[in-house]
Length: 421
Image 1 (spheres, one colour):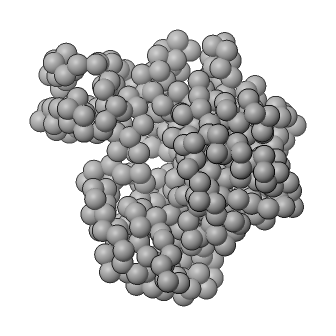
Image 2: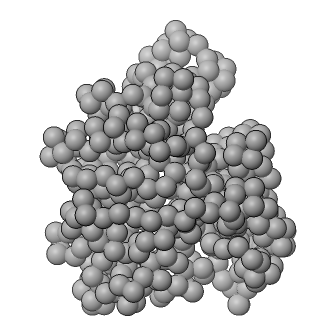
């Protein structure tokens, strides 16, 4: 069949790489894609916010499956419009995507379903939010309710930092995403990313990963969309995974079904493993980025077949196989990220990095100009190392990083530190 993949980041390059290898995929289109995805299929210059254009393209190119990568189109209801047009689409509906689109919605669902999570309060005005912070003290977590590209969460270590975050959000610093905020207790433990493939009734656990949100070594500096990740996460044992399924994932699926909004797609639970067990930090409703870049190389099974089974409600009959090898990715960013990144610099050494044993290179914020690859975003490249241990994968990923020559590029040098220690 012909498949259309929506998105343009490192996640989409990893998905395109895996989907193109499926015997079920005849022709892969990526909209809008990047120079890396162009090596896996055909990039399409399309405004994916125009749902009529997406539907028309699917009709004219005999597209049998649409896979929506990023959260924006999901929250905007692209899957709903595709399904209404009779086009098979992988991802949650607009109503189900509220699990990511609204922090307050998810917290209320957790309270309703008895899902372990941080204590919280929600506010739509500055003064009562500040009063709550003064009453509870720091550290404390300030979250914009809506989508903020991974930058809407501030773990405030002081009252001053909490005040600055609230003032920024209510002043419009994050646009409509910060019009309402959720304030949470600061949980203590180890973070882990847990993924489940869902068909509305059945949730199939996928591999685990750990990412690194802070921009600087030693987990310092502001939060980002993710500076690197590795899989598997040592803390996510089989018994811990079953505990997560029983106390968090399955109750969420049941609660969404009771609301008349069954969840189909990828349920990505950001977890804190505390002394009291796993607790939900927040949900995303798609593959993580950069987690997807370490999950896809470890997946032995046919991704397209699994996505189709989810669309058709047949996951109860599906089992997935994973490689025992570890994968680790380092994200290279443009100087200035997570603020305004420098763009336009030529990136050299990609061919050298790709030729290294056990290395994959996934593009994110790149562009092609005159046959040269240039930096065109904040998170620009994902250098992935594969090995029989996290240490081996780490060594290969950083060998790939060291092969890149890019004036203005930077990365963290400590990705995978928890597993390595």
